[in-house]
Structure formats: C-alpha cells, structure tokens
Length: 104
Image (tube, rainbow, N blue to C red; front, top):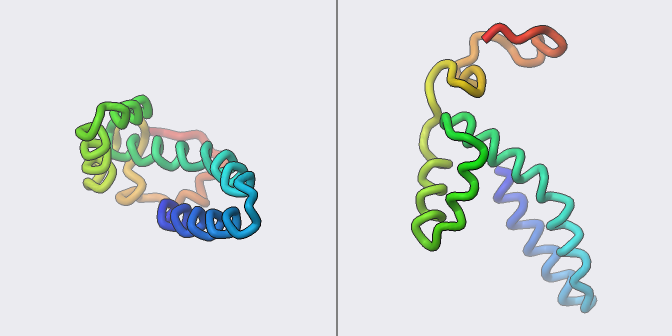
C-alpha cells in the first residue's frame, strides 16, 4: 500500500514539477519518504526472517531485483523468529502491549 501511494505521489509531483518547471518538489518528496520507505522494507524483510542488510541484494544486476521482489511478496515466517513474534499470528494486541516488556 505504501509503495502504491508513493507511485501515485511521484506521478502527481512529477506532473506538478514539469508544469511549474521546478524539480525540487519531487526531490524533496523523495528525501522525505526515504527513511520511512527503508523502515517498511526492513520490517518486511524481518517478517520473512531475513536481515535488513538483505536490501543490498537489490544491487545485483537484474537477478537481485527479481529475487528481492519474490522475497517481499512471499509469506513471512510463521511463529517467532530472531527478529520477534509473527505479526499476523500474534496472540496479543499490539496496542495493549505498549510500554510493557517483551517476553519473546
């Protein structure tokens, strides 16, 4: 969902940038969304049982992008892994656990 929103935002900002002949809008948006986008990507990799450094696979020409895409769309690890509990199969409500110690 986040990626779809980003694509729509880039299309709108790209059109505005061309219309007003100012490409700083799209550059500012790209910088503002870089860290949240990396955070979402690392969290998804953790759900799949991979390290956040696995993002660097993307830099392998052609194969890396396809490999990373397949990992991101595949189902995550069931149960607890080294990065924490399964967010889909979690027996507790995350909002009730704010401020309490983790016991995984």
